Image (cartoon, rainbow, N blue to C red; front, side, top):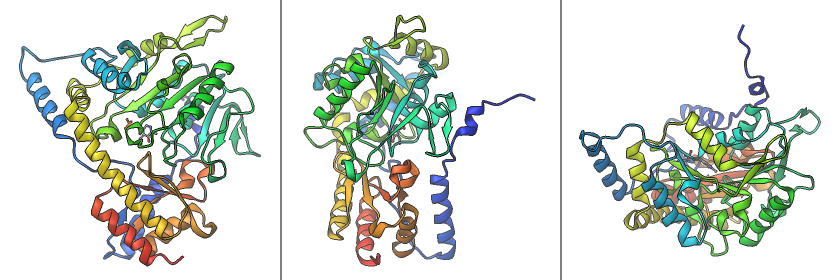
Length: 412
Ligand code: PLP
């Protein structure tokens, strides 16, 4: 019989959202009149910006005309989009990125998951905990884990960097050597960030250790504080050690459209078995052109529209709408005397569960007493236990109502 990739057997079941859905379903069956509000969704809810809709219509019309119809495009993305990214995202921040260092894709999830393929399975990886689960799972699938230590519940080649209130959610530089470092900034789920000085320390560490930083900036547009870098390429020396993932999903409501990109500078290298340097830009180009046939033309035109002056203004209005929800939630939690983090540079609010409850205990309490759904922090990694994620992606009125219910109905 055909054998399977046995690394898949090492994956830990990710039951988080399935279990959330199961408990909500059961609750609704028992309480059919309950008006359940979800502050658990990690998906956008506002419609696309008018500039994007206009660009989509225009691109569709082009596809209907033999003179302007397009088939396969460049796998790396059309020049019009790659150049718009340089001019709108990187140049204003004085971050040196060239168009041929940008690889357009169908979203950051694919890129975060696929990029590890160009690295050897003998590398050690460092991952912040809690974090977006894709980084760990895709390395496990590839077999970049070493042995599983039953005593610690950890893989030998994976270094977890706990981020909790005790260390201000700052990943600590590992004591031992690591080869690949995943940083998610602003972080999903904690909503916390690194300052310029803190990120510079990571760049310096990567340089010293000859390591690579994989920097996920999917929520960069939510940053409001001055001292928080919007791209790792604002940091001196990052071009020698970092690769950056970006997404139009939360930036411009593209979760159902699918467009993201990865920046692989031509100055970042890995090493061959005989010790020679190998360009990671060349390697990712090889991988991308072999396994990917490009993002849809109409979607790239829509993404280009996001990067116009009009598009930028419109998406910023939608982000401000979500961030106002974040403010409403933060204010409510403050009024209740609850401890929380995030919600200033990210659409996520990360709260400490009250009275030492587990993440799931608080989930049940919130659902049963206030008809509100959130996400248990333990689903994002072991250090998420005792925390809970609320999101700002909901409807404004429903968010106000949810906060009111938390204040009046939760028995604390
Ligand atoms: N990176 C982080 C940190 C995310 O939270 C998400 C989506 O939730 C993604 C990447 C995936 O983005 P995309 O929709 O572009 O695949």
